[in-house]
Length: 294
Image (cartoon, rainbow, N blue to C red; front, side, top):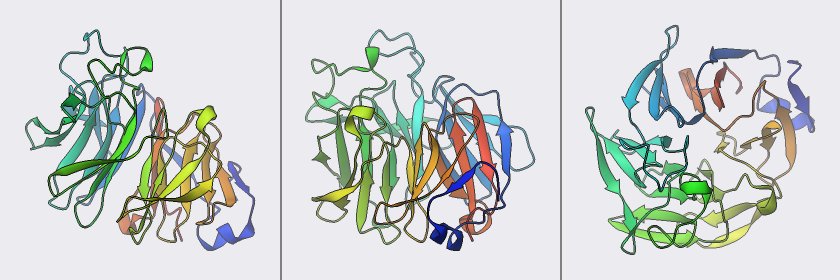
């Protein structure tokens, strides 16, 4: 068993390999976030502070995939220094890359040459700083919009959204479905896409909310936990990125295990053959655990 792994419930051994290795893919980034796997065989992630999307191809050095991924104007006085770059990345059903842009207050589409605005406003005002997003098989886009990218990390209702919300965009319509967090963060769908998880990494809002992904109605609290990025595995277990490492919960919110890392994980995603590898963004580091899933 790897020394970084703590097991709280033996059932976790049915889902993960416990003799894994943690591989460091990079240790010279600034603040990595929002990873996504491309089926052509590479990962992308944002370096928020560097204002760039990075590309990781197995066996090769990282490269800049999109420059100025959050904004072309980092000196904008409405922005928080070091938080103007892009954050979460996701592919839609057509294979287009969607990019959460803190500094531009929008979700944009990458057309292979430039970022084109896609979702830029709600009720006539720009978003705050779109943070995390996920797209389901029907094409619904769920995303969170905290003020992390705004000056001092605080809302500016005169110019941007008056609340920090979580939204669903579908068939040309954007709806807000949660306004209960001051800093909504990670969003994640269950494997059958029937439920959506939403969380915050702030200690004063330590609860993971569960919503019906079809009706957008609140259902329950999964667990009293904090998380930045949040992901599910095919078995419905939930992986929380927080200050302790990556906490694995079952679908009832019970802690199964903890994987610790040298630096604090901000987000993660599945990739590799069979999507059994875990790719982890952890501040200046990017890690990979091959064949974590059984």
